[in-house]
Length: 95
Image 1 (cartoon, rainbow, N blue to C red):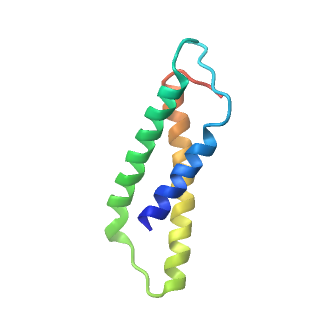
Image 2 (image 1 turned 90 degrees about the vertical axis):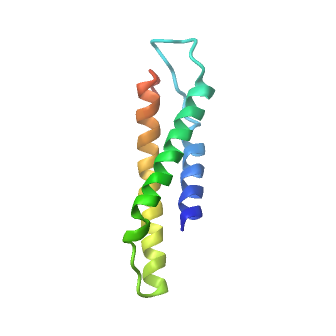
Image 3 (image 1 turned 90 degrees about the horizontal axis):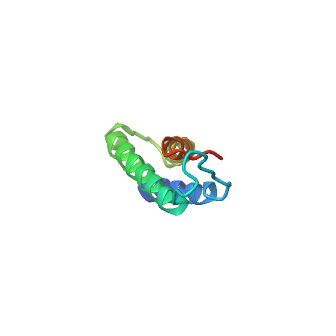
């Protein structure tokens, strides 16, 4: 489960890196450095969220567990996109 969520978050962040980012306040800002820093922040947040939720899961059968894991992976991906956009906006970037 943990590796599935981290992989989903990583793939989603890689896909999110493609839109054009501009920094109107600081045109000389380093896009790649800021993307890398925001990606690292998002990864840390995802790991923290997994650790906080690790003890609260309970599944009775494999099918229910698989559906729960899939739902959590989708939620984590959506949260990662939002977190990356907020991080980049805080650094002055706009899409």
